[in-house]
Length: 418
Image (cartoon, helix red, strand yellow):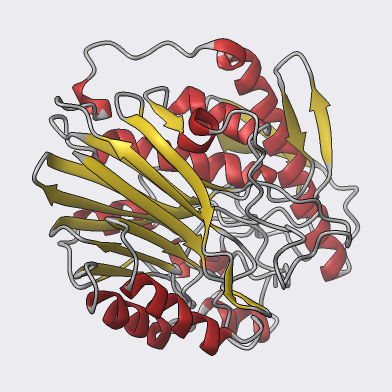
């Protein structure tokens, strides 16, 4: 059986994204005509836009859909399918970034939306996700690891998010399922430390584009052909949108699609990715392995990747912390304090003054935040993750909230670190 997967970051930011209403309507109409079996959309932030897309797509063959809701501004994730959805669940990332950043990643309910599809070939587990952005676009080469290390403040956040994504995929995928698909905007180029780490964390999955087009960079963002391109403004064309599938699936083709909605209008500031897979005769979900697969090629240096990942997290957390302190008018030459991270403690500076109440929260812990609450709730027509009070970033924001107050209200009231 063949399966066609499509993913697109729709750039649906309210009041920010250019020509949002028109573009989202055109995306819905295009999906109505689409031959895709499964569609993963990101940045569909407005509920009205999600409803419109679901309704338009249902006029075609994508009769089944799920809008995952979380946080104050939503998760932005919508999954559509030609096949019935047996289950749907959402986990919200516990690592979210800097609450004082104007970029807004902390306030978005980013996470992973899981849908289990009933197909003629058997159960298919699909995971739709959108990781925190890389705003600085600065890198350091690591030739011994065969990758580049991102130097932005969200680098460590994305590593923790990727770890949580991999844990969820390995735990949720049906042991007798036919295939596993992870698709979405991972905000990391193929040669980044993050993608090397993802291959180690999910060794049974493969980057479909790299398999089908090993010599084609296939940029999906900052491309000069996009009417909203930022190429030449300090950003280079890059591939950050992916379809990863079980290695037992044969990749028949992978194409960059949904480029132009009209002569002078792109569907989004990203291009879409469409992948055709030949499903295996037997199941290939992570849970069906008797022994974990060994990493191969340049991804085989697991200890080196882990060390580089920890170093990247440390640098990213320090960058976010210093940025927060600077915005608050606090000197950052303060004592060190340990923050518990997976397998190792990393030191970070914490001011004893205005940020004296910052706790050493457990970044990325599975037992806290939206993961546990979302995983225990039954699937509904819309998945609702936990509120941002359960998210862990640089600042555990619930410490500064009055009863019944939203996190955004606490920030506006200036109660952070009183």
